[in-house]
Amino acid sequence: MTGIRLHAPAPGWTVDADVVVVGSGVAGLTAALRCTAAGLRTVVVTKARLDDGSTRWAQGGIAAALGDGDTPEQHLDDTLVAGAGLCDEHAVRALVTEGPGAVQRLIATGADFDRTDDGEIALTREGGHHRRRIAHAGGDATGAEISRALVEAIRDRGVRTIEHALVLDLLKDAEGRTAGVTLHVMGEGQHDGVGAVHAPAVVLATGGMGQVFSATTNPAVSTGDGVALALRAGAEVSDLEFVQFHPTVLFLGAGSEGQQPLVSEAVRGEGAHLVDADGVRFMAGQHELAELAPRDIVAKAITRRMQERGTEHMYLDARHFGAEMWESRFPTILAACRSHGIDPVTEPIPVAPAAHYASGGVRTDLHGRTTVPGLYACGEVACTGVHGANRLASNSLLEGLVFAERIVDDILAHGPQREGRPAVPAAAAAATVLPLLAPEARRAVQRIMTRGAGVLRSAESLAEAAGALDLLRRGAEEDHKAAEPGVDAWETTNLLCVARVLVAAAAEREETRGCHWREDFPDRDDQDWRRHLVVRLTSDRRLAVHRTTGADFPPVTPGALTSGAETPDAVNPDAPREPQP
Image: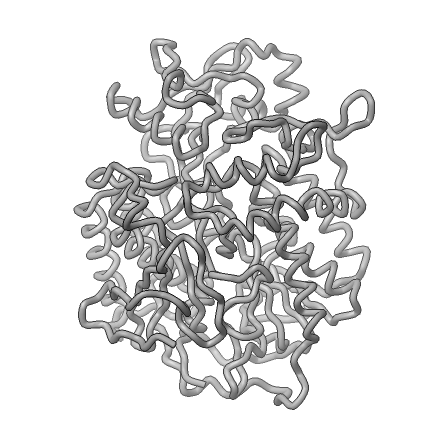
């Protein structure tokens, strides 16, 4: 099979499995546990340790219609409103109807949620929700508790894991079906260096790509590896322009980079107010829910106020909580603030927006299937259609649970597709080898993206970003500038890949919708832009961007490009237009 792959040594060792799950957050571990319970030989590959992904950092909680008077229909309505006209209603309906049961199964696995005095699950509110439906654990340590329970279950059930392993590329057989992955293990355990896991089903659950920006709430491992792998394998990605910037991230000073401490939306859910330096609340009148408006609205309001006042941050005032509430309800946030010299009990918290969540990703159907046969995706790496143009708070953990279960149901329904297929994947010698970007270019990519494709975007800023990214790409393609294979170079190359797609889609979408904010197109345009942008990497490493004909996703057709889409609008005028099925 021809294709595109990273410059890397040939695999020096192999592992055989029925299913390989790449990622160890809520989505990946849920899939792995269900596959194992069904008797499938399952291998979990994770980039660092099992509990080092984004799930562990989730503070707010998990949304589901669990409370008296709440219904899946109300949860659906709130999700559709937050998604700004681009949610796939079928996907959202699956999420909200199957969500309560998925949460109960998570509890049965061992997750311990906070309870009321009468033993019921304690529920709170977050932005965009009209009901208290956010279940939390340890006050503001929900992700840590979920991760603990799932990791413990993985170990108790003896699921095979390969830690400290960066996934590189998808393997295919001679018919183009998934046949496993190549990966690099960083000197831990029985494997070392580049190897391969052979399996007829691959579940991508690699998380997000927040590290493409200078400041993010995402951990260092969130470098877009799954999206980049899927693109090289020929899969489609969609809605990558919709990157949610969390409105309240602890401001650590001008020029601060890397992972920033999150101040959960649940703090506003309990009554904290956003104020400027003069103590003036500025969300009143912006939205009926004020501080609890959807995240894109709050982030934009903070950014506008910062521009008006010429400041680099606003404040979140929760002094009225008192010490007891801070210590019992938000101990993690309290400790983080105090570690940076800020005491929320006695002073407002300086906050500013930072990159938080990718609403887009690898395009899937309602069963997590991608356009590459045998390749599935779930969690933040996937674009299921649930989030539309803006994720509703605390829907991400639920999406990981629900769609991981749906993927396993599909794998079990069809069985690992081994019959009549070679035990070893087809040789990859014909694949185009992608030159690697030097590790020191990582900060350059991040600063280009922050400056040109952050909260505020325009044709000018996006064109400058695209040009700067292209210079980096062309530099890597010159033999004397290409980097040698290694983890840092692979990660940086993945970041460049997802950055190019994000900028291309953001430049194409000439409107403001959800968390995509164009200064030069400030209005939402339902006539021309209530549609999705689907991107594929062509064989010559160019990006082909296609518009869907409407807000509903076309069917996911393995091997075909956006069935039902319009004639493609290529980002590069000289890029070949691929035929429509």
